[in-house]
Image (cartoon, rainbow over all chains, first blue to last red; front, top):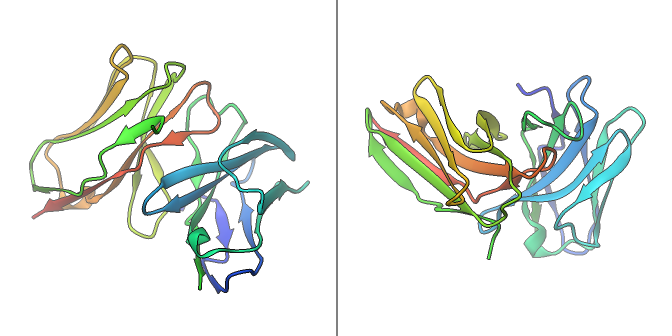
Length: 115
Length: 110
């Protein structure tokens, strides 16, 4: 158990809908990262937050948004869903934004299926 | 062209074999190099970490980084069925966000 909690574990929805994925980082970790994993693209970095502030942005679509709250949990909002958004969404956390050891602790992911 | 290239496999070996997994990369700014292991339906977990060039050994696992060739490797000695998983290389220029390879699916047959 990495200590990172993600909910829901599974989600099935229809095209055009909006969903929210939730992540609670490990106790004491200030940085949260969101990744998307699909069969053809592998693990793609979406966005990073550090202590409530956006730290880095990757290949995140405009239809997607995220935030980190004062209690450090984070939410990833996906809207106007398309079939291609079906994937595993991982949250990871680290002690600091620099993560000099390179260790990100990953949750078990939220599997999104868009029908 | 992707920043990090990794052969997705799948790779199947008999128990006890030596496994070699590799990644190439294009960004010369990468300084931190990692290998993560991902079991089915689980999140990735850190296996090995190397800063800059050189080798690092941990039990049956050895990580190598050759920055001049932009090439990293992971060797697994005396492979076990429990090593069956997807292995992902990951890199970062300065810590923080990691750029992952596509992952190599490894199966070790008893």
